[in-house]
Length: 68
Image 1 (cartoon, rainbow, N blue to C red):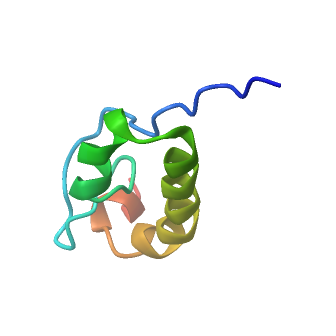
Image 2: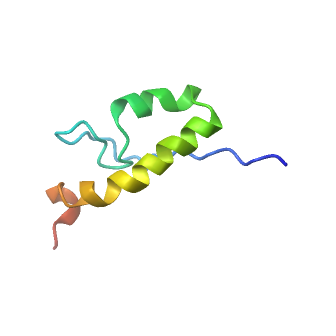
């Protein structure tokens, strides 16, 4: 069985927070740089890390929690 390619988590909001995490996709600069050459297995590993990172990160970025 052929697995589908793992899509990039990039959402074109490319700005690093003070911890060096992209506020759009929640990847580190190292993960962003690594992505184009990463194996499908490594890409899935990066995505699993984002799932764990995102909830905590959202509460730390005022721009993402601001209400109108």
